[in-house]
Structures are given as C-alpha cells and as structure tokens.
Length: 274
Image (cartoon, rainbow, N blue to C red; front, side, top):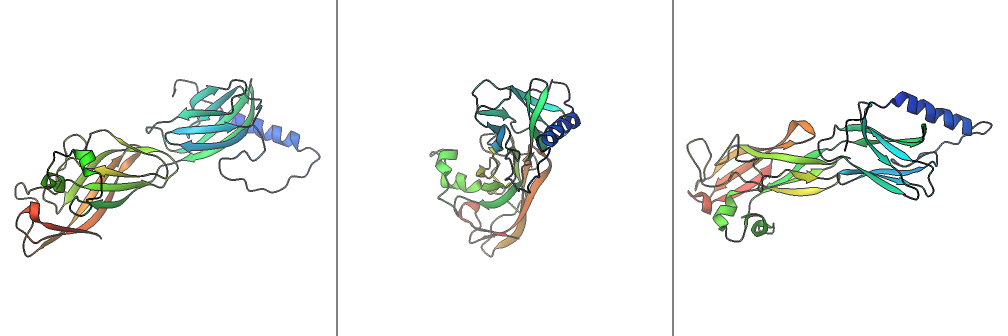
C-alpha cells in the first residue's frame, strides 16, 4: 500500500469517462439498467470490484485494454496503484485494517486516458452478539485457546464475546473490556484484554469469538466487584470493544445473576440480554 503518490483529479477522471460514454452513445438510445453493486455497468474492462478479506479485488474482462488501475480513497487522493500486465484478469489492493472507511473508486487507465471507473463502499460495522463463560458454553474451544493445563476454575473466570461484521469492509478488534457488576472490573486490562494480545481481524460478513485475558468473572478482588451469594446477587455489566477503523467504542449491556454459592468457582452465573 502506498500513500506517497500525488492526489488524483477525480473530477477530470469522471469527465473523461462521461465524455467517452457520450461519444459511444451518439445516434443511439440508451436503455435503463440496474447492475449489481461492484459490476461494470457499461460492459467495459472492469467486470467486478469487491472486498475479499482485507483486500479490494478487481476482476477484468478478457483482453481488457488497461495498463494500470488506481484505487482512490474517500478524500479523492490516490490510495494505491497497480500495473496491469497483458493477459492479467485479476488484481488486488491490500487495504489492511487501518484504511479510512468510505466510498472508494477504482479507475482503469490506458496511457493517459481513463477508460472506466467503478465505486465501492468500504465500511465495517461491528456488533456484539453474545457473551458467555466456560461453565455455560463448554463447547467453545477453551482448551485450544487457554491450554489444557488450565483448570475449569481458571477458564470459568474468563469469557468469550462473539462479534459480527455486518458491514462491507474489514476491521480489527484491538481491545476488550468488561465494566459494571462483575467480580473484576478492570479499566485498563493487561495487554488489550484479548487473549493473545494481538488485534483480531474481522472480515465483512464474518463472525468471530474474542476470548478475554482479564479474568472478569474470576474470584472477587477487593470491595468494588460483585461476588456470588447463596441468595443471589443481580446486576448489569457492559462489554466494551475498541475497533481499529472506528474512533468510537462498541458497547453492549447484559443482565447477570450470581447464585448458589458464596464462592465464585462454584457460582451459578446467568447472563441475559438487557
């Protein structure tokens, strides 16, 4: 990826495309059409533009008369450029997870002429779908994540959070926190609060489980956290995640009940939506 190229004149490109389209339609009547998103409506060299994982993938028609592709970011500046060798029908632009979200344009050029242009919206949308514990969801890969040597008590103190990307662009989860009525509410968990400490990439349409590394439901430490009780303690906690492409945190609140014991390792913990 390169951001060192000079700004691309989007208006000039669009005028060139519009002029070429008008010239080709001289003496002809156009027909209304509704092409699918990411397809070239004019039957030109751009067959399809789509996001695949952390890349923008461009499919060209056979024998496309194109020598380079420009990817223009939402502010109109050149994001990246790719040369098109003879016979190549697919190229990709790696956008990673730190790109500016918004509408991008793929510009196909031959020499100094713009021959086609296709827009695509690249905008992630992260939602928190579920949160749970080992004692309630033993089917999750707890041993694979934390290791078989960890006791059930240790695994019961951690939690998983399921997130889904319903948007059109990739992103990464960089931090996971729990606050409110839990045994261990930590504002600044070690690392980023995600087991493994690495950002978790979530591609468009993908659903992933995040596993905590802050022991939010472990033994109560200090007087601030909510513990278990034979008569039952009820409260509410909030899951907070930080997303690389979004300056705002994504949050979701849950009701929780701790009952059946005075010790967290033997506690019955019930989590439900608010």
